[in-house]
Image (cartoon, rainbow, N blue to C red; front, top):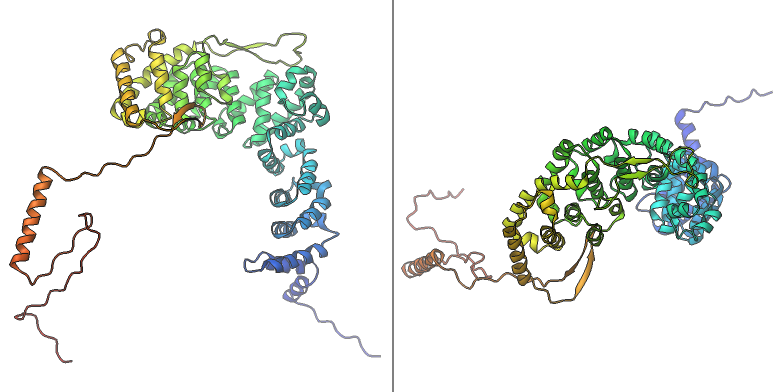
Length: 556
């Protein structure tokens, strides 16, 4: 009997080579070729078909693995609609689960970005909207939720918000006229719906703030709803956690709305802390489409004059020239010179305009307390300000008008010809002619001489920039206005120079004539650029003189 053959022990390299040539290793080899830039499109389709066939029964298990998740992402990026549909159908029941993990959520995002069929999109969104409340409190799932929310229409956004609050979509669709009304309007028509989702709203907003997931517009909408309509006790706790980080959420509509609500509900010490966090960013906030309303609310609500003067007004004064010609920056100045609601509504447009102060606005705001129903008992009220905002605006105008007068009179062509500044100048003239400057103590800054100078400058520049085309309505940011398209005229070229420059030119001409008559062997100098001649003459090399002191080259 022959002894059995001894089996050779494989080395680590040989084991790895055998592993990479069969099964999962072969898929990774195909993936390396697939993502190569030099691979032709037809070859890529063949590679995708091989990968999908080898993993046909293990798509879900492979999507949870980091390496295979990247393989499927490449298949989605370079594949066809049939490949997208195969993956979407295989993963539709586990999309919410896949969106929670750090590697597989990238595959869900790839399917949402690169899908080429409406049927695939419907499969993905229907599966994800059911778990919107779970995605909102997940660090990776909120990225998928934010992508879907940002790409959705207005009605679809209301659908996502309602599902995040755990509401049944058929019932909400019936009450909101198929999401034609937003959630707040639906709550007013059906108070029982608000009571049903109040506890879920408080829980969800608290989780989002505690986990630091408020940097997305979808989660900022939940926080804004809690601050506007939620129970006051929980709103105060959220404000205490957000008071130092509001500067990071002001660039969106919901983020700026949440910041304004924080200023409205907070006490004076918390307001001072919020305004201190704006230090060094006020000018940038004024140039933001949504963040400019937060500066307006700060001038309305904060009663501590020292903080407003040092943080807000000091930086506004330094950047006043740039704000006068900016469509969003000029909205802050328009807010100060339009105390009436009719003028403010005519000039300012935006989501934050409704919360601004105007004459006749009440100093109290109703809030919801825990256990109080709108149908049985009136909610508790919160005092918005102690000092009248009319006086605060007077302080702001006293600080800004001297610098503004210097800028307007120093560079009238820049400001009076700007389409962003003209509405403000018109409102400033109207404001100067009213009774408000005398009541605010700025009548000496807006005297008759300054107003007459404004009118004369505006009329003279209007003659220079007289328009010939029809008027067009322009809306660029918070302020809207009517402007005309003025033709751009080139600057006139002077026919000749006068004075000393002309004498210098004559002297140069006489010198050139004398040089040409005296030494004809020398070549003429080429004309310099800008003297009226575009063609330059070649310069001849001067021959060396015969009696030269330079040593001659040797024959060597």
